[in-house]
Length: 551
Image (cartoon, rainbow, N blue to C red):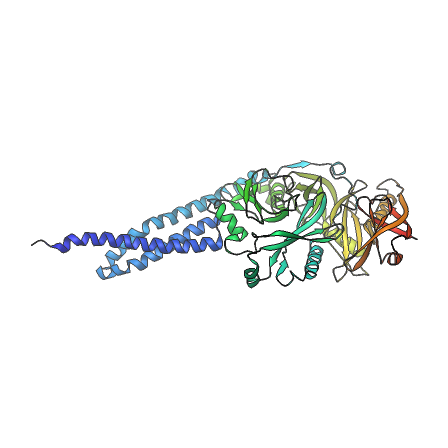
């Protein structure tokens, strides 16, 4: 008689094998999707997280195979191992391949054998400081540091009853050049998950613009809220929105900017690897995301209104490669001939409608002096080196604090200015409440030359006098300009605890700023009064600082 069991058995084995495969594949797919959705790894062989992601999928599949093949133990260990081998040979081979590629990629990016490639990541041109960095009028000098800007932003939000209970100010105060004025911009963020749930339909209603000269904080309310930001959840989260639209791209940290029409954007620089598989981070274009609509576009040539494409930390890293490896890897360790590196810290300066990062350059010996500094355009990465032996930024800060040590003021990180063709550190001096009380200028070449003043103009006057006294510059007469007229408008603002009055005179365009603590007569003025104001001729622009006031 014909044995039907033998005829059916082969079919049963095939169905069982494919069923196990489908179960293993389904579990692996679910785990992979959850991991990808949460961690957002780039699907690129240049991203190290890609190898961990694929390796995890293989291990999950192998683990599932060990479980689903367990029924074979009733048929014997040999048959069970055969099932495991059948299911695991491909993912096991993938893991071996991943490890091999990962190791080879690391070797291909090793600085010992690729030092010259790392050195060439950044092109550094020589520069002429007096020619490249023009003297800036005080209405263009950013007087606020990031910490002070954050305090002003938090204070402004506290004044808005309709927002303060639901939103907070983001910490990423991006310094940009907006319509030829240095400002910091930052969006609001949701206070917590519950507040996100209550407000997600409308989105984030506003962002802040902090003028770094006048210290004015403007809340820009949006007719349609921002739906895409790092504080969003699920598909509207900025990084998730990026990853799902550009799964193979590597990105630097997005920055918040606004265009000339005040439309909010996220600028997301694309990171590429220039050395081997994993080394030599560089930027190649950026994805621009409209923060309101989520519309996105990848461009290799960003528009000129964008100021921040190359992160400052990336430029610092590339210069350190350039300074370390210009004479080869072994010279960076043994002889250290001409080995240089950046100092701790950096700041920004606005030139020609672009934002430049600057930092000091010192020798590898780690002494307390600079051999020069670099300026690097954060939109184009054009970088120039300016030789100038002198003090490091922190040495200059210590010099400024030493002048007012009896007052206990702390110095902000310096700005680099051109004063009488001399590289000059400009700092604000704060009290324990983080309020700016004075300003100081420190000569880069001779950091014992320190001038202080209650206003930037007063500080500059004293600094120019000291330069002439020390024979660094020729004796220059500081011209003081006197203007008289009838007051047609008075405005006031409280800035860092000080009341500042802005006077507009008849048939005169600018506002004249005078602090009440500097001249109490300002408190008694009314529209229609005739006044005589003494201002420094170096003070130009829409708002000018008053040296003295007479009625």
